[in-house]
Image 1: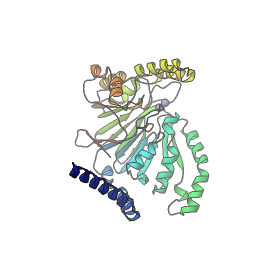
Image 2: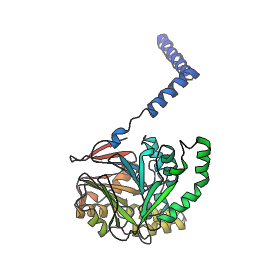
Image 3: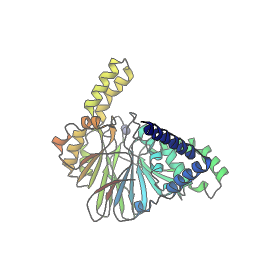
Image 4: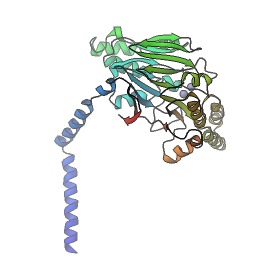
Length: 353
Ligand SMILES: [Zn+2]
Ligand SMILES: [Zn+2]
């Protein structure tokens, strides 16, 4: 018995000594330095190599809060450039935390101007500018994008001046500051970007009363990805997505939203209950998204802009209820940090950053 007591006492003393050692300033500094070297030393060159498309999910949530998801954002890498489709709140932090080289951001494609799609546009502008972006950031969008860009440029004008004054023109050059609107009509399908073998087409979707609202199709080296934007089930999306390798479609589980509406009513939250009653009309249920994917004949379907965010296995099962009956395979829920590869040689690979 006595030996057991001695061993226990020894262990307690050893643990105490270890805790004390870890709290010694020299040890803390060494651990901090190691973490910094690991963080700054990350090599993300592979994102820009190769000859296919790479898709990074920088935000897979919606306006309903989730601790695990930023609001909507999809990054697409092609031929040494990268683009964002939408820049919802929190998404820039997700990109930065993943070590994506911000200075290589070549443009942002906005699907529409709801707040959950533009909340981090200011952050994307500042972050990519001071990381070496050589020109003002091109922001493509349907009519109305000029107002969003004009307003943000004005809102951030003083900040840009402060940054140049503090860090100098080499780090924060005024000629590359700010956003540049690249507006298009948005009410018909049209090529809105074509460079270096990458073609980006916009097509109208159904998000009334938001009009215009668009989705985008990226074609590069024989591979293709379509991002739906926010939409109810949309024939024009099905047409535009025909034969695509990957369809990234928004999804709202209306059966869960109905329960949330009832719960909000019971709790006396009348405004919230009204919002839950309104939103099914302009979003797509997971089963409808699966049907759209089947009709378009796409290779793979990934659901994003998940409403409500299914962050636990239980809610994921409820969210996807009924989908298997429509589409048996090649369907997944997006997660923040997910990286999907579409190599020119074919196939699809899932990984993470
Ligand atoms: Zn949205
Ligand atoms: Zn919307």
